[in-house]
Image 1 (cartoon, rainbow, N blue to C red):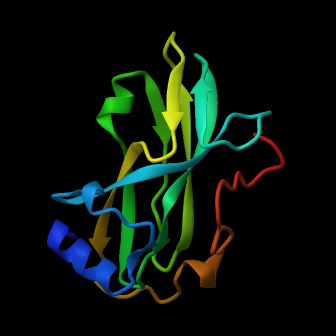
Image 2 (image 1 turned 120 degrees about the horizontal axis):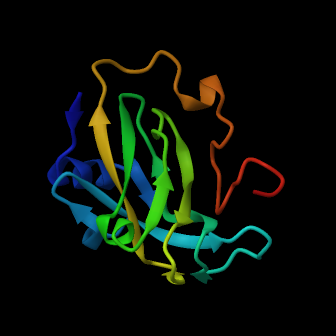
Length: 159
């Protein structure tokens, strides 16, 4: 696998691939892209564009960016170190070949202080990699549970 450089990423975005909505040139890194907060959900609360996350609280974030991952690529997610240093812990999976939609990311405030999260904050980095061959069956042809998702999708009634 080969990690996409900033140049490759921007070229693919211009072709309507990788990130097809709400791309920001300021979020491009040398080897990835900083995903930005769209909405925030604390369990038991309404989705909002700004939230104060109390200590020891789980929360979900949707990305502003709408992904459009090609058949020969995938993405790896990493929490931005500025949030990790503040006590935020994240649990991520891979972004599969062929996935389209906003990403829903899960976090936990393990610190002893309230952390404010706002729409547009850069919260996680995605690193894109090309695969040695195209996938036989892309994401929507396998499970596709979250294909074309918009906003926060928890996957369960209430988290």
